[in-house]
Length: 230
Image (cartoon, rainbow, N blue to C red; front, side, top):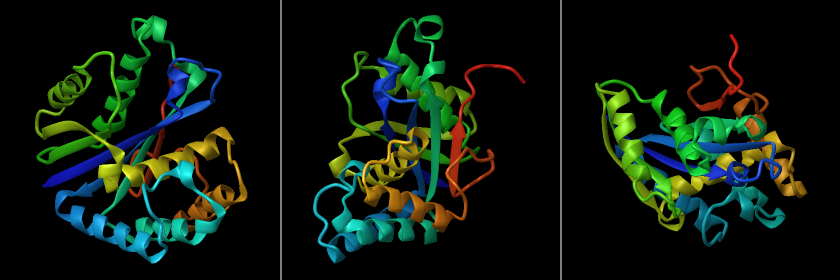
């Protein structure tokens, strides 16, 4: 079966300044490829209903559009073909000097590998799309594809490609959900609209925002342990 994965990140500055936030996150929307048009059509219809122009982004949340964002959450929750997986990283535990040749960018893509690898299943084909960004090493995406392919020999990593978020509905949905969850983790909830949406999301998924078990399929939150131990 063919799948598409759309990814975005929140609070990336912790790789270069740990004091910016307590946590950062990389989120991903997973859908069967055949459902791409259904995702795009439904999000477009919701936008048109509420006259919401531009990108769907957590940073753009405002009180005047609260019902719009609630309907986005409703659509995600009722759509069985959409799954969301997030890796949460505690900034104080990131040691780029010891593990990443003092390279925050390398550390970032290692966490991308952890996000993706554990949900890639045998005999499937995957197209992976990341929000565009400028990398110091222009081979980062090729390396990520190669490492994922080598670690998943019974599946096919067809491509790992960067896309501008304004061109990708999937990346926009990933941005919105990632920002929502990481805001709760960081206790950085600015404004009543975002607070209401976090509470509404928790109501709809019937649980508080916290780490989940590996087998959780709809909203999977992987808070990685960088301290070791057992």
